[in-house]
Length: 179
Image (cartoon, rainbow, N blue to C red):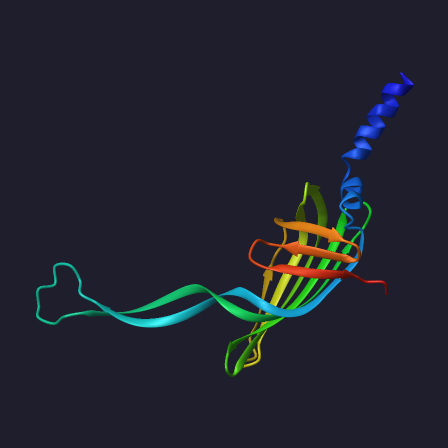
């Protein structure tokens, strides 16, 4: 009976978030700082004129304003700090900025906490609490949004004191923080 209990305890520990975080080498403090090309959603306002079906008057068009969004390659500056505890709990803070125009810079501050789990090289961050604050240098408007109760999955590889985290379009290289 004791061997069955021991086997059950071993199995439970083998699949616990603590074991996953440790096995993947995620436990500890990690930092990333750098500038690289990333896709940023950009909005543009366009004025268009359309001929309406059934409109038989000569040269008649209907003016329309169209707002479109397009992923655009942009130089993004990021500073990130990721802390993962042995039990899989994490805290991830991201401060990023990028030019919106020649005279305006967007700054975003994201804060996320929750649990991380691993499946092979895929890390899923289950965010229990999260927020994002956005500001622009060209006006005083600040927007805040709730980033709670969602998941984000990344491919994670570890080599020595380097942790590579990729969302499929960009890879961030973290180094172990010993402070």
